[in-house]
Image (cartoon, rainbow, N blue to C red; front, side, top):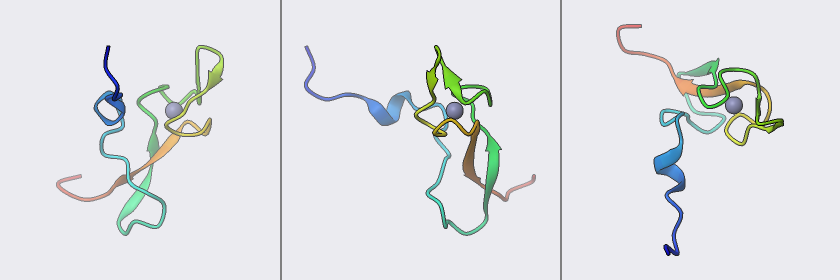
Length: 60
Ligand SMILES: [Zn+2]
């Protein structure tokens, strides 16, 4: 019905940032819970690594 996919809206790692972003560090991928796989396939969010880059900072 729709010609556009809500790709970003479905991302659970909404705070993920591209490689090279300052003050970013690896964190467990929320989409696959760090397993790197979803339903036997490679997790598209982390590329199968189980980790994603997210900004570091705040009250952390
Ligand atoms: Zn993942």
